Image 1 (cartoon, rainbow, N blue to C red):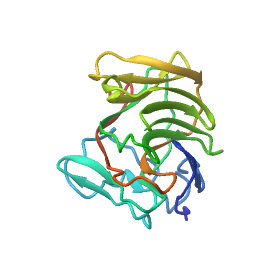
Image 2: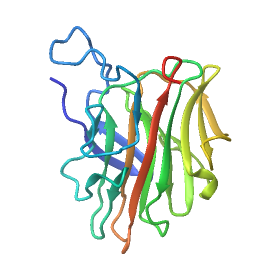
Image 3: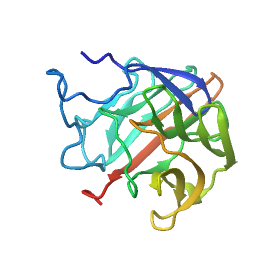
Length: 220
């Protein structure tokens, strides 16, 4: 049986998991052979979450809900914790594939909290786009590129461009800017997260997500 994912936080926008982080094995009777059949896209139109997602940390004090056609992660003062959703099976990005999501509303930018979009390998290497403290961070584990967060970064995307992983942002989901590039890893688990890396935010806010899509040759 697959072990549950357990979230732990190492720093702002840097997440890791105590879990298997492996591909779904079609030869294992208790696992689905293809969790993402018929394309993987979610506009979060109605609760509950579909079978393609799992809650990151069900015991977290920060609830994950689907409301008003959006995914919401509501933070509250006085707790240092994270929550979010994780895809039920890992993916590989072929050349031209990309995973995109809209960050409709980030958490408070006053400090102590952040939210983001991440890909995690079986070895727990974390490729993340994190937003917090007035900045947007493009990270590989602790190696972070940091720039000011603006409305130009409303849409977030990881893309395979000629065999390289690109961290990309867009104000309108049409014009994309590559912020960082790196060698492309494989067996990537998708995460959307929000939380507090320390206690201190009096009004931490709510992260609101919409329009997730994994675009491939079969599902452009």
